Length: 391
Ligand SMILES: Cc1ncc(COP(=O)(O)O)c(C=O)c1O
Image (cartoon, rainbow, N blue to C red; front, side):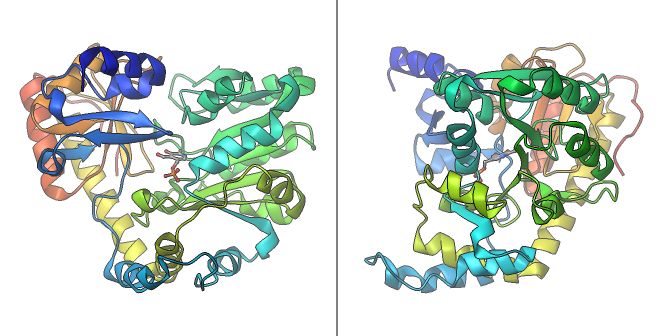
């Protein structure tokens, strides 16, 4: 790609494309952002050769049960109205709710944008943490809405008290409250008690979007899903995805769980465009609980092994409950470091301002994590070991 074009794309897509290092060592193998997802431009071989630790994907790939179900759905490729494995009913049963509580979307990213389209009309604002999964704020800015962003606390956890205070102070202007739990990019959870504090502390009618994209990786007993609040009839929207634990990121399937009234309002703005393979894959994935448990335990073990090594090398890691973690670069700025890793064939996460002295790393396969740790030790000198924070 022409460098000017790359630059204008970079400006256009802001932080996302900046992270892709379009001016890096391998312009033929660049990634750029499109429609909220990172796309790779370069040869297949280039792509395959990278250790992909940048996008919190599931590098193990879908299990056989899911591949088999998707392969069986090819026969519907030419159809509109086809059997879809009763995917909405299966999801509803899985959560003990009704089909009218579910909005199926091509990835949970669409839940996030539809939330904005539905609730930020007429100059309303979204309130949430910073940094968090910025897609909600980017979409708000695309539709000329504003965001009230509350900085994380010193320990990188979300400042629940300050978020509640802001929600009350600006209640009349707020369209919805956004909570990413666990948070991306830090990997920190908001405890069930803190979620309760939010639910009880903000106006009863204020919609709350709780993004549980990484729910399946959590093993902290203080965490709990916010789904019960939907059953209580609170204006809570829980977003879930098949992109992470189920390894179906490229298939694009996710969903919202909320009250029938909210789902009805959101459905007006949803594309409804989910393909047959994704639907059948999702159904098989929900049923294959053993495969999900396997991914969870392998991911946690590898995350803890890697972070222990980094901490022993002298670089503190923020305790994570997800398939990624943030390591402190002890004063170095992340962008040039991202490019150094790229030069070594490793893609790591983009900058997350204001945390520009931290680097987000997704947990990949064992050989990818070994490659990463080796590269880290080449790039960063050994320092006195820090407190080990991971289990
Ligand atoms: C917190 C969070 N929410 C939502 C998404 C969107 O994922 P998808 O659209 O693939 O479901 C992501 C993707 O990385 C994420 O990290």
